Amino acid sequence: MKLKQIIGSAALGLVGLVLSSAAPAQINEHTFRIAINGAPGHPVVVGAEKWAEILKQKSGGKLTLKVFPSTLGGDVQVLSAVQGGTIDFASMNSGILQGIQKEFAIFDFPFMFESGKEADAVLDGPFGKKLADLLPSKGLYNLIYWELGFRQITNGRRSIAKADDIAGLKLRVIQSPIYVDTFKALGANPVPMNFSEVYTALEQKIIDGQENPFSVIETSKFPEVQKYLTVSNHMYNPQSLLASKKKWDALTKDEQDMLMSTAIEARSWQRQNSRVLAETSLTNLKKSMTVSVLPPEELAKIRTKLKPVIDQYSANVGPELVKELQSELDKLRKK
Image (cartoon, rainbow, N blue to C red; front, side, top):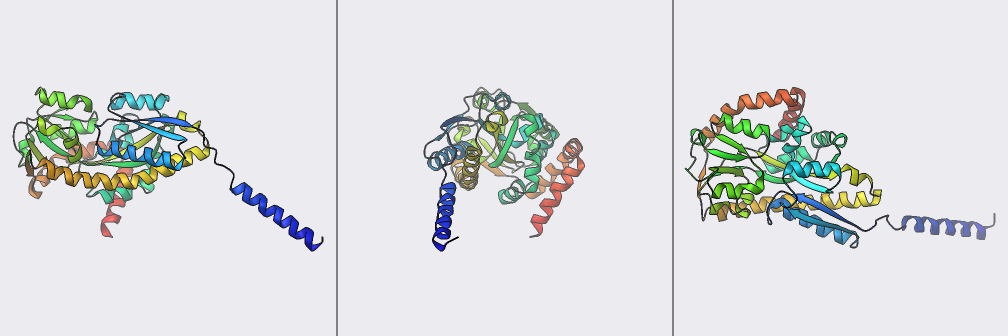
């Protein structure tokens, strides 16, 4: 072959390669809905709003995400709707998923994580993926984990300065068995209730109090109907970002990749923002609530009371899974 022909063939090959690599992504126009059981300003709601902003920008406006805070139903109803494909996405406490996959109860174990960064390492690593991989058979994809943060106790009856002060309080808890058993073990009267009903129940004194992270307490305006705030950090709440398998599988790979990459980008922002909001909210809450901090010796008493609950649920989710998580935590704490 003559040199001119060789150069011509090479040039044509290069052009073909460039055209191939520059082929437009297969992204069609879609409008998605995401349901979150939280008020405007809630750290997961604003995280979803950030995701929507990034998604719109990166997709050139082709992919739109509409955020629905506390308007599409309670967690149980929303979860069923995502499984059925009538809602595209939802974000909720990962522990709620124990209703369809028992292993997720491990994320509701009291005092499991010591910090948000520790939780990040576990959730973004092999352990978080192992649990996420259990959900496709349930009609769901657990795309990533966001953060709600550490839970605290509020009530309208008395300041909680020691473990025994929790006894007798009627406290709203998440609709999750381990939450009910946790507060029963502390002598409280736990009332499982959808989050959208909590403010009214507090206002009408149907319940004495509730437990949630600082930012949720503030954005939900609970100080209007609650006087006492107790810093307990008794549970850390990862949030599963769930996709309907039915809807997700119908998307092109480019659309899936775009949704996933932007969700990961939003995750970093959401977690950082959640932690900033928690600090700001605590400062604001101190202006209108009586705040007490449970000292280490009282927290130790609470841990002792909760050991039977942890043992019970360890048996339910599987001792090997609990051992695996504890091993991951031990490694992180030695670094």
